Image (cartoon, rainbow, N blue to C red; front, side):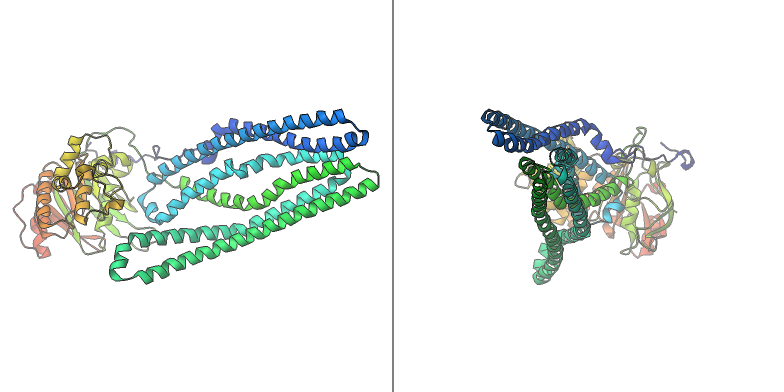
Length: 595
C-alpha cells in the first residue's frame, strides 16, 4: 500500500450514503414505487364522491317525483338504493384510510431511513454547525411530509378534483345557481391563499423558536449538576422562561391567525348556503328550476364547501410542507462523505504524511491549522503538545479524516486520505476525542458499539488493554451493567477507559488519542502508558497530552503554536526545549521523521 502521492488519484464520492438523488429529486424517487397505491386511492375517492353526489340526486328525485306524484314504490327503491350506497361508502372510506395509512408508513420509514443515513454521512463540520435540536426537527419535517402525502391533506388533494364533477351535476340540475357556486369557490380559494400567506412566515418563525427552546432545554438538562452545584437555578429558570415565552408568543400568534381564518371560512359557508338558497328561490319564482333542484343544489353546495373549508385550514400546512421539503432538500443535497473505499485494501502499515496541511472552520476568518508538513510513523509513540487553542484536537480530526483540509492533504501509507471510505478509516484509524460519550445500554454494548456481533473474547481483550477489565468486574452486573444516559453513572476516568476499550476492539494500526490519561488516576495512568508502549511496537500511536509521564515515553513530539508547527522531532530533542528535562531512554527513533 506504499504509493506515492502522485499515484493516488482522489475519486468522486460514488459510495456516499443516503438517498439516491441522481435525478435531482429525492422525493420523486421515494414516491415512485407508491404510484399504484395513489391510483387506488384516487379510484376509491372517485367512488366515494359519486356516492356523495348520489345524495343530491336522491333528494331531487324525492321532492320532484315522489312527493309530487305520490310514488311510494319509488321512495322505497330510492331509499334502499341509498342505504346500500351508504354501506359501500363506509367500506370505501375505511379501505381508503387503510391504504393511505400504509402509504404513510412506507413514506415515513423510507424518508426517515434515508435521512438518518445521510445524517450519519454528513461531514463533521456540517454536524457541528447546528445544535442537536436542529437535527431533531429534521425528523419532525419528515412527519410533516408524511402527513401531507398520506393524512388529511392527501385526502383533501384527492377530493378537490371532484369539485368539477359536483359543478357539472349542479349545472345539470340547477344551472341558474352555477355562477353563484363558482363565486363561492373563488372566494374560498382566495381566503385559503390569504390564510397560507399570513400564517406561513409565522409558522417558520415558530419553528425557529421551537428549535431554540429545545436547544435551551437540552443544554440546561445536560448542565443540571453544574447548575445545582453553583446555585444557578434562578439564572437557568430565567433563561428557560425567556426561550419558552418566545416560542409561546409565536405559537399563540400563529394559532390566533389560524383561528381567525377558520372562523371566517365557517362564516362564509353559512353565507354560501344563504346565497344558494336565495338565488334558488328567485329561480323558482321565475320558473327556472324546481324545489327539488334547490334542495339538491344546497346539498351539492355543502358537499363542495366542505373540502374548501378544509382547504382554508390546510393551506398553512402546504406552506409548512414547502419549508420542510426545502430543509430536507438541503439535507440530501449536502455533500456526504464517502462510505466505503472503491477497492478493498490491506491493513495499512501506519505511516501518516502531512503535506502542506491547512484547515479553517466555516465562518472563521483565520486558519486553525496552517501549512503543517511532516511524517508520523510507521509505528512508535508520538505526542502533540501546545497551549490551549493551538489546534491539537483539530489536527487529530484532520488526521482521522473527520475534517477535510482547506489546503494540502493527509497521506496514509502514500494514499490520500480523501479517497478512503469512512468505514475503512474507522477500522484503520482509531480516534479518542477529548470528551468521550457513552450510549445508553450496557458496558458490553458500548465496547462492542462498532461491531455488536464480535466475540466476548475480543471484548475482554480490549477491556484488558484499556485497563478497564478490573473495574468492570467490580460493577454490580459486570459487563451487563447499564451505563445510564451518556454514561452518567461512571466517573470521567471510568468512561474514558470504556471508550478506550471501544477504540481498541478492532485493533486499528493507527491510534489518535486526545488526552487519554487526563481523567485517570496515577495507577491507571501508569498501566495505560505501559499498554501504549506495547502497542507502539507495531502500531502508530499519536497522543495529545501534557502529562510528563506520557511525554517521557514518547518517540517523537510535535509542538503546535497558534495552528503552526513550532517544533518537531525525537522526544530526546524536544522535551528539554519544553523544560521537562531528558526523556526516559527510548528505542525506535528511526520510526520518527517529523519536519
